Image 1 (tube, rainbow, N blue to C red):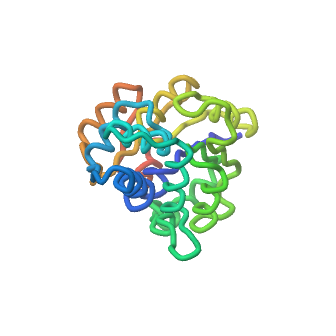
Image 2 (cartoon, rainbow, N blue to C red):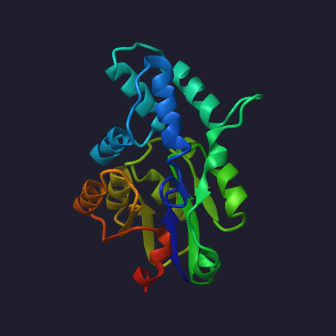
Length: 224
């Protein structure tokens, strides 16, 4: 029996500054004409409760005094993130964070899964591009009744994959709260270029992170 490692995706497995975060910025600017800073977006993530980037985009638009329907915001966001017939989506800009050989080594000693705030199909697009056949199970936002910080996704994976211990790796307060609610150890990931990094690290520690690393490439020594 092996330990089970459950990974969040955005900011953990993939760098999303030029994809999801940029999609939020462009969506908000499209409806309001206002350029949202990276620091402001990170401030929302530090608060917690903003795991859903569609909801965050909609809230920022409303905060700017513009009333627009949620579905309209989602459609605009998706046209930017997934692209259109004439324009590639920002999803193609995502960069894989793991160094060569990391997951090959992890697969030898651990069971691997993903619990993400993305739609499962969108998660698979990126995982199939960078790491096909690595993760035994992928749970997206459309696979659960309640999204993070609710721990339903962790419970689903834990019930489906035999294991000894469970670890959850994520980069946001909602990830940390989800792990704490599930009763599993949480490993925080906050990259060195993250805006408001010290605040982000402190927030994860306050919400129960056993350790906060700069990258998943540092994680192996903490799993022994």
